[in-house]
Image (cartoon, rainbow, N blue to C red; front, side, top):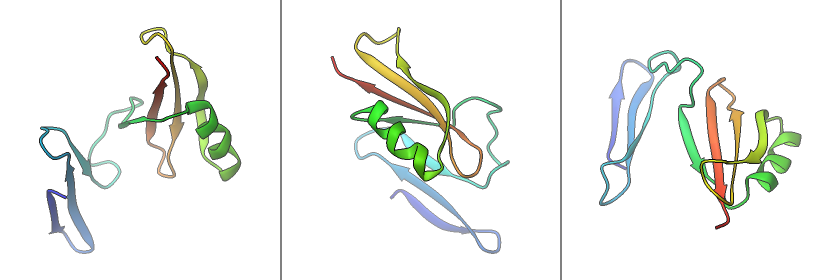
Length: 95
């Protein structure tokens, strides 16, 4: 955890940072960070097909079902929406 601090009444700023990396994840209220219909998060999965098969019955909205990733030989990808409507990109690679 990089930052966990109060922000307005009932809210917090939360930043997660990967040790040794400039990358970080920022959590914010919906609407404060807007990317339109672009993914707000990219996840790497061991098996996108199996994950989507498990997530569907649990109510996860699969926007783009698993498909081959032409930009990554041996890769697969899908996109889902979280409970807040954010678009999330998921990919796996078996190369």
